[in-house]
Structures are given as structure tokens and as C-alpha cells.
Image (tube, one colour):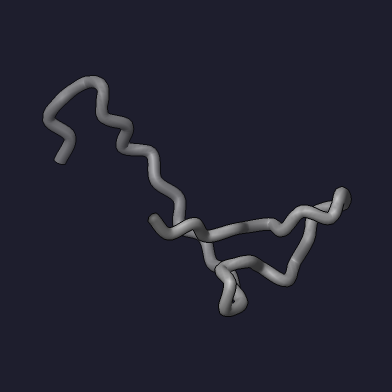
Length: 40
């Protein structure tokens, strides 16, 4: 439930297979990974 105006309720589920360093094997046309997971 959204209770204030500045909160965005837009969500999208994605599925990716990451290697042990948190990067996808799939790459864009310029060689960058499609997804990179950064843990803080």
C-alpha cells in the first residue's frame, strides 16, 4: 500500500544468472554485462 505521493509503486521482476563475482555472462553490443550486482 502506497501512503505518500513521492513513493513510486512501479516494480518489474527480472531474472538473471550471475557468476560468483555478481556479473551476467550475457553482454551488450559494447561488451558491458547486462546486469552487475553491487553489494555494499
